[in-house]
Image: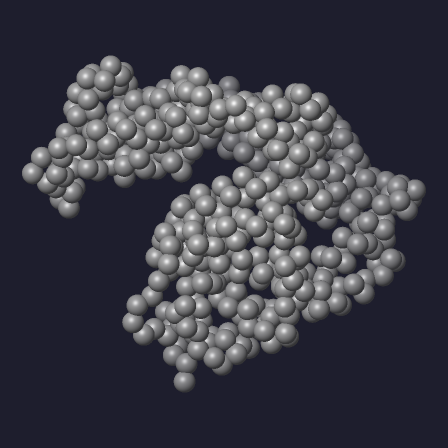
Amino acid sequence: MIIIVATIISFTTYLSPSRRYSGQHEFTGEADLGTVNGEPVTREQFAAAQREGDLFFRLRYNQWPESEQAKKQVEQFAEQRLLLDAELKEYHINVTTEAKARLTKQLLGLRPDQAMPADRFQDFIVNDLGRKGGLTLEDFDRFVGHQAGQEYLVALFGMSGKLITADEAKFFYRRENEPMVTEMVSFPTTNYYALTAPTEQELEEYYTKHQADYRLPDRVQVNYIEYDASNYLARADKTLGTNLDERIDQIYHQQGPETFKDETGTNVLSPEAAAAVIRKQIRQYTALRIEAKKDANAFLIALAEGHDDDHPYTTSDMEKLAKAKGLVVNTTEPFDEKTGCTNIVVDPRTLRILFSLRENDPDDKERSLLYAPSPLIGENAVYVVGLRRQIPSQLQTLAQVHDKVVADYRQDKALELAKAAGEKFATALQAGAVQGKTFDEVCADEKARPQILTTFSLNTPSIPEFSDKSEYQQLQSTVFNLAAGQCSKFMPTAEGGYVVCVKSRLPVDEEKMRQELPAYLVRMREQRQVAAFEQWFGRQMQLHLVPPASERSTPVS
């Protein structure tokens, strides 16, 4: 608590509203921004709610909203936030500092009993929140206050959720934990691949129908200079000075021994081993983000000298300056945004910058868009990057992609054959059931070999036979709706499909249920509380929230 408050006070000036980095949610002129409880929404209120939406998106998806779809989510969140703020005032709910501190720890992934690491909080507030998101400390404080306030409203209007009885909880526990014994007949594409050899005419027809799949996307090729962090460790040691051991000890005690575990994530490291880990992280951070970045920035400053609208950049500027400084310029292979680049190892979001580089932008007389405006920081190196060439999207001929077309054709054909065989088997099961035949008897008639699956319930997280999570969830959902002795229809998957039969449903372990029921009842009540609150809040939105004019299909009289 003390660390959080002290840090907040020290950043108040730095992140005051006047120092806001981004004005993306500023409005000008008169605008109909809707109403809440009959009161018109002001520009300041709506912009503040949108900034909270930005932060919510960042915390949920670990990235700032950039796409149109993401911005739409932010708009919807902002409208809900405006109503939430009004409801908190309506019910005179004042969030305590203790509640905000608790929630701040939760947002940063800390346990309630853990000390707040000041450097981590500082990095989040100044770099992530401020520089990248363009938000202020005031925005963060308001966001945390609203989140904590919502918890109070959930407790108030979700009270009916607590009324679930132990007997009701037993019913749901049994339903979710009832073990199911099943057998499956699978139809993998590999069983039919040998039957799919195409003729040249079939290949040509397939290629013609799927030409769009063989079009190369827009690609770029760039030149780059790599500043590897390993070359700057000695300089990092000099920068860190003699108080490194003291800093390591401070971080260790702030974050707590439990934070530092071995590679398995189960065993807590000894103080000496944890200190070694912290030392390595600090040296790497300093070498990469301070020393290597310093040289990369110096190169970009030198590169900019002498350039203006009358003396524009050229693609050869980097090579000339690098040669003068004794540096090596490398060139990547052409790459697209989806596949990424194997030479420049950075976050995919950072890599997007390279696709904004331009050679002949009419509005860029200086041609500064030939070069990334700042160094790109990866995990182990910093890069200065300049555009070599842009390669527009182009269609590949059948001859160029012949082998891939053959593979795609055979895969699609095998999938088609697998589906046909699976549906034929499912039809045979239905006919057999009418005749009184069992699953095993139909399997014998159809020469199908059933596979006994590991016993599972709705609560079982996984079984060895299904590695794909979504396909396993599909299996659980399918089996849950079948009675003992019933079989499913053919269930298609990416690699073929299957038909599953429920052989029996086993009784729930009564002793295990007795032990787990108290905690299960608590979780159920919490879930019911949230559901009741969401139902109430949804009604409030319908009754008291009028969205901005741009989102209304009809004007408000």
